[in-house]
Length: 223
Image (cartoon, rainbow, N blue to C red; front, side, top):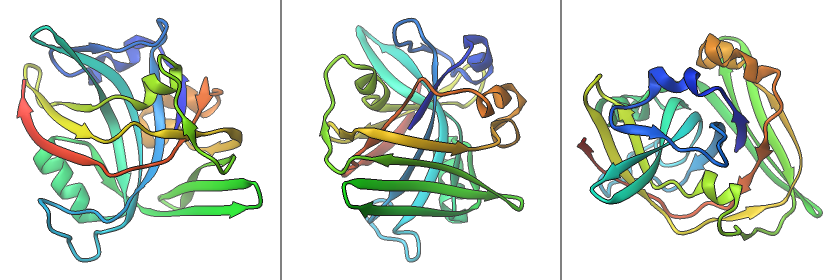
């Protein structure tokens, strides 16, 4: 996860109704996130050739007040996967913004270093995001920036000007690795829109690597 500070006005057109931006120390974040789905099932059923695949997304953070409870969640600008069927299901059922591209990844441990990379091909150009980290994951400190980025358990999408789709994402608390170095070679303006072009030359506030876990994506509702 590479986390950037952005002007709040950039995200206003993407903000779902009845949600508000969730800030960390008065800072508005967007995050470039790469990961793999492993042993994936749809409604408890494994779909042939759609069990393991990569995803890279650009997302930002919101909260929604449900009665007296604040639900902290994410909104996706765009999610890139290598499987057209995944794109169809996510866009149709969850009102998301998936796009299908050729993708690849690298997971490799060399001595006391772990090399992790995600890449996708836009037209004829490979976009890449990689980190070199330690090999031992550690608990995430409470009330830290890392906790803020990683502990959002709801997804929100803009269905219309007045309707918002909501769904819960469940997983145990993750551990994180110490980052030694990173490389981000992404044309943000071309991939995500000209309003994000400055990210191509910006330095992220932080870069993180988390150890994954079993995850469930629950059914959607409208708020």
